[in-house]
Picture (spheres, rainbow, N blue to C red):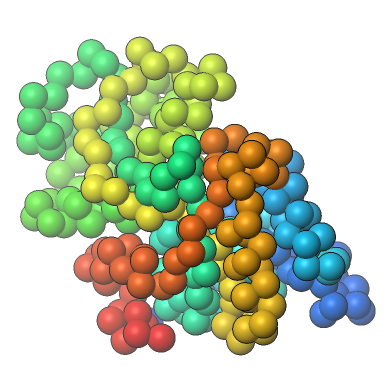
Length: 293
């Protein structure tokens, strides 16, 4: 069954995609790239990620169009609807895209040389937590939007493994962007907020957050980094060329072609995202038969 939030976004995302790309009669000849909302605004995301996509198109000798989606579900929908050929997306968004439309991962990005990262939950340093989550019961918890791997899926799944329903265990809310999560703790809007270690480190590096303003109270097991994904039915020969082109990006190349701290790619497939898929099944967002596509 398609999640209701996924269905509800389809029409809006279709309109956004058409407006953003300005599709022309020759659009079929172009590579249609998409990227999720990794930065605070769509313009920030496009500025940070377009050099990579331009490099890829140049290597392939093709024109291109780049869509920046405004939520994590949007990029999965763009692939499922055939509005994007190739996408750089979050792991959970990819698993949704695979379940709904048969998209396939072909590579995983490296961040500071590693192909994995961690979901985290942060609080103010003065918040006294001897044992998590026991000592936090009844306090305010903010999870990110339901299309986020680290911000929603992984902490929700972890709570489920502990026999906890976060909606009744905490004063609960969700739906925020990652850009707002850490700030909501610092500003006192919530006691705890989900995020991921890469994002928190980036906020500290950019001076938006000071390291002594938050502490981490929970850290997930390692999670696979963002995949590069092709839509179902995409030309296999072109898929191989794209995979070869991204794997050829060296750490030195990445300094000018990719956002800060991204250092290249490794080969991967859908199997590399099984733990994300299993979490999605466990929380009831996808069905086992969808996972087998």
